[in-house]
Length: 226
Length: 119
Image (cartoon, rainbow over all chains, first blue to last red; front, side, top):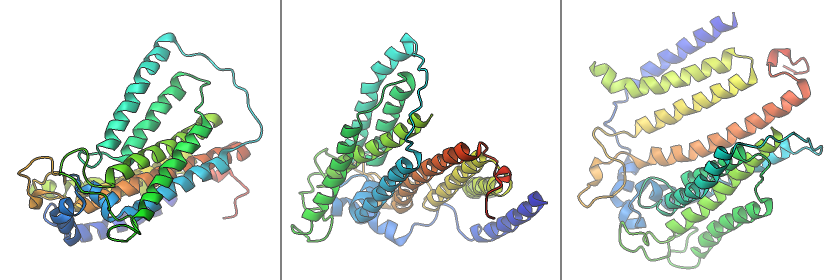
């Protein structure tokens, strides 16, 4: 009975969707704001990657809110999962091949993530993606070397410093140059070079550290529970 | 064939959304419901990205000299989806942690078998 009603509801949704989408042509429309960003983004922000110039340039205040949501989720996870009783599991050691392979791969994964978030204004990628790759490197260590834990103090410090750099750079923009929050007050430089786009690469590096350590703390809580 | 070419991305996105909704409506296992939520979110993200597509468009990155701005896809949906993916990850982690706590107190993940619930 429940399945029957769910199917009827889904059919109603399908009919509504078909009625709506056949009026939206595929691959024809560009929004007005999108056209503006593509046409003027590289001159106004100096970043070759327009998505980056939207995320950290035009909508950087929104990105600050997004990082706050991620931070809240990490705190909520800690509040829900933290237990006072400590369980002691028998830790089975991983094999030599797994252990050595992970120790070999871990620095390379970190190097790749640093490449992704430093070149966020030139190529696909950026702080969030780089942070996710950092967390995947730490997850590799968690899975392959049971019993190893990250340094929680260092993790918290790198998270706080990342967030602070973001907010302080934004606050400096209130007093220098165009005088608004997160204004791009550094020189724009030459398009398509590493030292271009003003504060955008600095913010993305800070974001990479912040997102990476937040995801690390999520992984740490989850692995502690298992 | 022309219809398929024009609407295949919409069909895929809405297919994912419908699969996710169906799982959320019918299943009682909490882990399955979280998987459904995740599929639903993927479908919504794919739909938003599809809205910004331009025929034969390139990625909105000025990597070469002779790229012109009217050949590029819309960057705004991509930036929005970048936000949505991170929020989705946060929601997924919170939901899984709540599922862990629920299993600890009731020893089951089946919502039908949890008698203390108030609805």
